[in-house]
Length: 552
Image 1 (tube, rainbow, N blue to C red):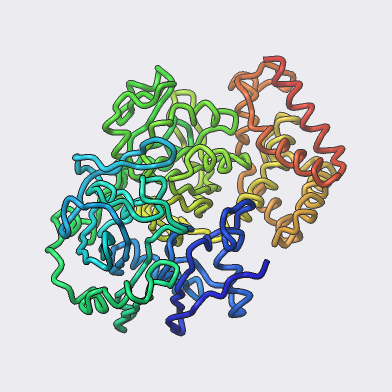
Image 2: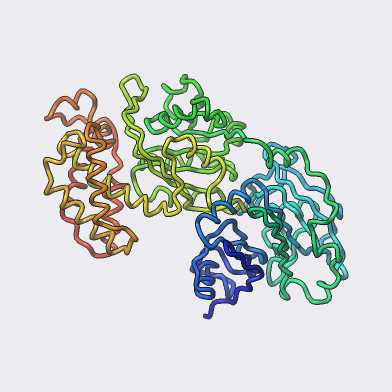
């Protein structure tokens, strides 16, 4: 099957705007009802134009029209910020044969999840979707709607028009009349780029509007930004306005979560209001803490208002936690920070509508017997997006996540976060099981140099089979550097396995709790089995840690 041709409607030295056909997705998928849905837009454009572009926003697969792509990471970050702060005006055209309750105006309300992946508009306005629109007849029983969204919610225009009894043609999910495609088109963009005014219009394609219907559109729609749109509601003006306060939930009361809270408490980070979501009764009395149980958060209103949720829990706790988060709002950004690998894939499956980020930190933080923390050293905090969700906010970083990164002295946005996770996995695969096996601090495993190198070699054999874009020599040096940097620390697996009393006893076998061995060595072993790679040293370590845990 040949890839579709993507019309380029605007060329700039920093970006392009293309007229995306309906059915071409942001990412490739394996099964499809369309001739185009197996093709990802970035792959098609790389073949067509010989350049690898960067996504700055997204369109749903069935939606056609204006898609802006950056030519380099710097312009991607700048354009992403323009989308994030609502500095780019967006206009859509939709067709409906429904009898609308009104022909122009504003549609405002919160959006809530309904059944089968759909959403519904409510009368509340806590985090409202705001859509302005005008309409015009383009044929018998057929009406075109020119929509200007002032927010970026999942399915926003589709839900808005459904709420006024004008579901979009071809929109089966929202009870639109059957058609060959979804009749929704990203029509125009207007924004200021480094002092240069950019105005772009992408005409709807033939498979959406016939020539006669196109000619029936009002001439005033050719420059939609010149229409007499209603004054923006106060809520929308605040979205574009001054610095926003973000409400961030932190699951648990562990070292990483407390370490971030400590940063958020600094006066210059006052735009983050955080709350601990704790599942342990002994932590419910802690300041800024509310309980989280199997049925979800006790304070449902607080749950709905979270802008971001930081999940710094152990790999083995994630499945139970996902059950507790079943009522999490789709606008909440989810940020996973854990030693294991693969947890983000579980979150993507459980929360397909949410933006999901993964990250890691090299902060050296120890949780003391009184439950408080001691920060031995601040390293880096790296976060990147692993799943864009189904909204239209930028892929180059979202405001709550940027605020979290800005709170850290070395917060870094990571465009290649999956590679960083593999790098972190290699570090943990060496340090954690060896420190647990020899019951020692991180720096003391250097006495077992041959075993360190053997574990590295097996990990690198798996990475080579995966064709990861990692310099393995530099990764080996990085592992050695981390051992040196954290030489006086007990690793998390050691702390999981042995109580404080046993840390002073070389022959102690008492275990305190489970470990993340399945998310670390277990992940590597699983990949190795798929690639038919033998890992005798790693499998021996894996079995040994499990044998210790079984004694608990």
